[in-house]
Image 1 (cartoon, helix red, strand yellow):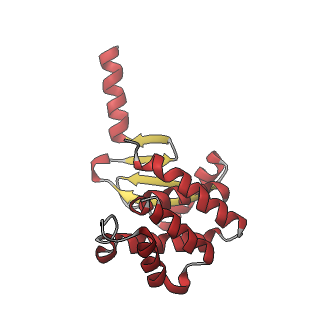
Image 2: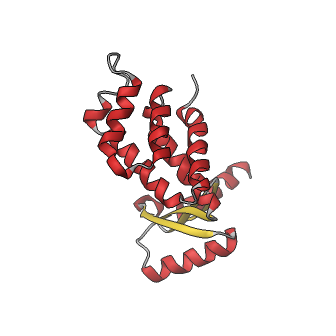
Length: 179
């Protein structure tokens, strides 16, 4: 069976193309987030995949609940997702849409794990440094990981920069073993 991410990809690309054509990436991002929230709501989630509920009826319910929050193309998109049984993939679709949007807007999401909370000034310095290194605007999120002892771990796309004390100790242990 194909992974959800693989199944979601063409649907994410399709709505991204529609959003780009409409020159409204933020607006469509909001609509996709709303759709994902609706699909994950317990009362609607129970209807998805129910054998007695037609896909057209399900799409109509979702579009009615969303009301005017959904544009015409988004309402049609809901119908296509329902007809193809892809509503359960909305979390993956939304995530992939955001990745496409970030790439189009030259924004790189970066997660930083630190041993201690960073001050606002430290976050700004780190963000500027990362922007220079990666040549993109940085959407920085920071989390504290007590197991790091000291230092930071930076995850930017598929790159990981481990400048933590724990990482250095692990590399030292490996070097000693392979001597």
